[in-house]
Length: 160
Image (cartoon, rainbow, N blue to C red; front, side, top):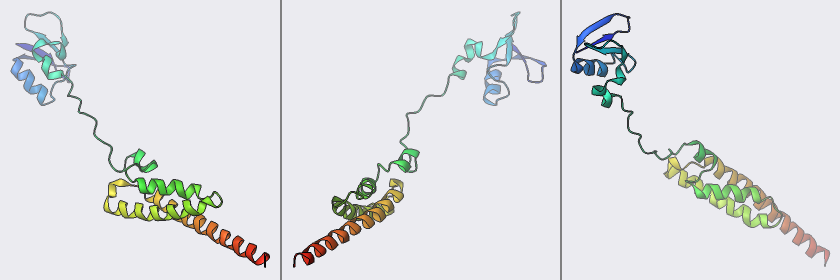
């Protein structure tokens, strides 16, 4: 049998260990509640009772769950949508003269494919990356193509 000091500062008892376990489950007492066994002189915290050792074990740690589709990393780097990611980088590097034609037009196509993939798989992310690939790739790809054609036309007209 045990006695406890309640949250109100009053002494309660005699209480069986089963009743203490019930009160613990009902959150009427906690690990810091002062308790003493009948015949003991000293009060001690409830979690020091060997009979209640199992009641205070921490819950098991669950294994890490995979990140959801909208995790911070997937927003910054859409690794679940490689078409959008590659479209983004190709669109950015399409600024390089002349090879930007190939890079830009490829970025345009991959950006469109990335958006279609995202529509089928919402957790994939990559909408912004796909759009950057489409816009930058289209702009630079067709821009460099137009400039190249203009240079070829000007050069051929100059040689006549």
